[in-house]
Length: 287
Image 1: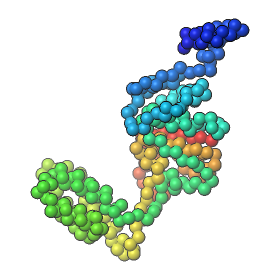
Image 2 (image 1 turned 60 degrees about the vertical axis):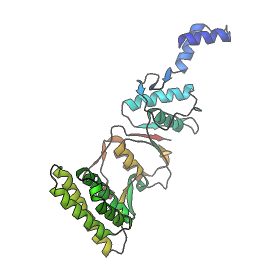
Image 3 (image 1 turned 45 degrees about the horizontal axis):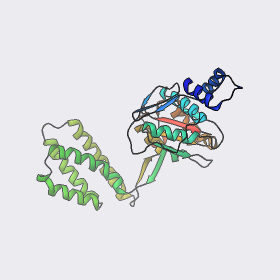
Image 4 (image 1 turned 45 degrees about the vertical axis):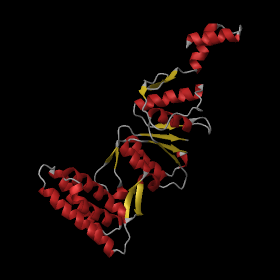
């Protein structure tokens, strides 16, 4: 860096400023950085391995002295597992810098533009009417994974085709009968993990209760749908909350639990088990 600054000084030919003073100025206002095919670093942040993803860094992104200082500070905070609040005028590169870092690190970034009407349900989730397949799908997929591991599909193709037909046509009673028949066969199969068959039995029983409620309730199904923030918390994605200063007090109170702790208890879902924070999860706020 010093050699490049001296070369630049000689090319400019500004005799009024000494080379040492010019080098000091450049070093104070420019951060050393490197972006390679396998890793990157900004200033004093430690080198970070890059993950190859479909989302590649934006070639139009310009590494100015301002963005380099910001990305260095953000990089250090990320390595220390800290949540960040970025404060600055509009158009100073806060959001774009986070987006560029997410692309470099191969992380999925979810951006929310906050306002006074933003509700905690928009971030955390809430009860919403859902299609019947929303209830059938998890049990169906779990059953298929267990059944195909225990038995050969070609010898049980008629049974699997019938089950698929009941699933696609929302024939709940017939579908549950198929599940129960398959569960009986799985219990008789030697070598299977009894915990997995027990889990399947619990899922089928829960599906039966829901089907009874559906039949007596006029066809409406309400299910708690997790919001993007909770999904990101569980799978390790990044979340950027823009204009956080416009959020209501109730939303900020909910967010404080996530920012300050490593878990959250969703009262809206009547949780008794805490939702744990993934070690790769990061949350950024801008205002």
